[in-house]
Length: 235
Image 1: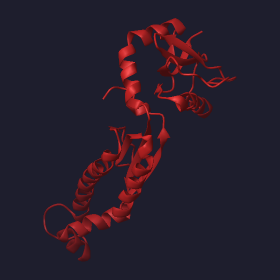
Image 2: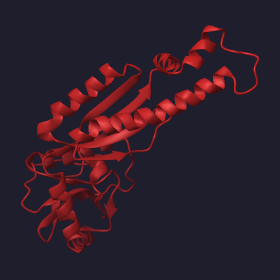
Image 3: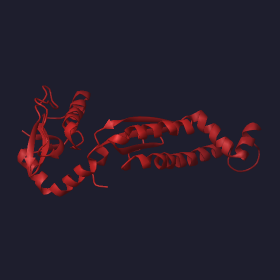
C-alpha cells in the first residue's frame, strides 16, 4: 500500500498516542525514520479526496505533532510509493529539511486576505483628486473630450489597489519573519501569508487592527495561527 505523508520533524519527536489520520476508517499515523528525521505517515487511501473530514484530519496530525517543536508541513495529497521511498527522500534532502525546520521553529503562519469597501474607497479616491471631486459634484459627466468620469474613477481605484497592497505589506512586514504572496482571489486586493514568531502574535494582530482603524476603506480577514504551509520552501 502507498504511504501518505503529513509532514517532517526531527527524529526525537514523539507523536501523541493513537493519533489518527485521513481515511474512512481513519488510518493510524506512524513515524518513518530517515537519518535523524522522521516523516509523519499513514497508509494512503486508494484515492485521497480533498473532503472536509480528511482536510481537517491532515491538519490535526500536523498541529498535534507541532506541539513539541517545529514540523515541516506537507500540503494535502502527498503520497509516496512506500515507507522505504519516504526514508530515502528524508536522507537525500536531509540538510534542506533541517534548515527549514530551524527557520520555522517557534513560528506560525497567519493568512491575511484584503479587499476594499467599495463605497469607502470611492470616497477616498475622490477626496484625493480635486478634479474628480469637482466632476462628481457637477453631475459626473462633462461634455469635454477624453476619458469619462467612470473611466477616471476606475483608473484611480486601480492605482489605489496597488498602493494599498504595498501599504499592507510595508505595515505588517516588521512584525513577521517572512512574507509570501499567495494567489489573488477574485474580488480581493491581496492574499498574504506572514510567518510570525509566537511571542509576537499579539503585536501582529494589533498591527492588523490598527491598519483597519487608520484606513477604513480596507477590509481584512486574518486566519491563524496555522501550520506554516506557505513557508516550507526555502526563501
